[in-house]
Image (cartoon, rainbow, N blue to C red; front, top):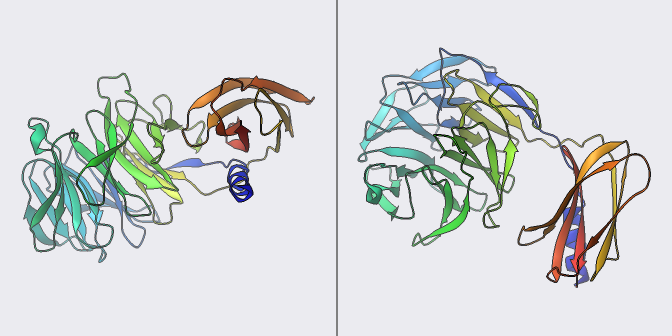
Length: 381
């Protein structure tokens, strides 16, 4: 038991880190408003669903049309040889191009193909059918190099599936466009396991666009609003706002940056950055750095008695005067059992919380001030 406590203590004793947002493309004439993909050289490709073009952005920022004349280009994915697969949503086809933009093959795959991703351990392509008119046509499929397709899953609970991503273990996640539900496809492909529902934006377009995986979390964009959501893949319905608020194009610290209808989202290979396209008509592509940088605020946190059965005292000391948040949540269920906004004025701070009616188990006490965080394990008996 001591080994478990030590592991959890080390896991929770990490100070928070800051993340920054930059604009890498701002061009209304080269409008990337949909899916994104990265090749092995770090070139970023983005589709213009409202048009007919896939664009290429080099690491130095040069932008060019990679292929044109497409019919609503949607999902994008590369194989291991840097051949680009482009889904034509209204063209009922997937087209394969080499690194120079030469068409190598066209695969007729049926009506309304949408998202696409390379299989985890092969050059097969996983793609979806996203059919608004016929729910039974909604499916996840596998395209083999010879052009044949194999159905992996069809029908409910798929509801116009678009977003696809793999985690580091090779688990495939599928996002529904219409009801914003995210599922994982079981290894034997016999069922979809429910993960979470991204909140309704309350707008006239509350639709989940694309999803990505990085550093142990899923990220999703919702049409009709200006936020990016973070989803915990192992805790049911654990969803939080990761970035964004009102419409805008402000760069800088992620706590203040704004977005305008974020759409496509993808992580780079080492998960040090997320790239986001925007369905705003402005052609913006944004980059969120996930590189960890320690914040400048020192936080000291004590909790006693620990284990606790009736009351727990939370003592906090900051390196400067500041407002901060206290949150206590169950460690394995993710349920928030206590939360409050506090202020530190340079003097001793002590908060006493009753735990008498809490279920016995492990909890996390989290102290946060913007990007700075400090956690401590709490055991309730």
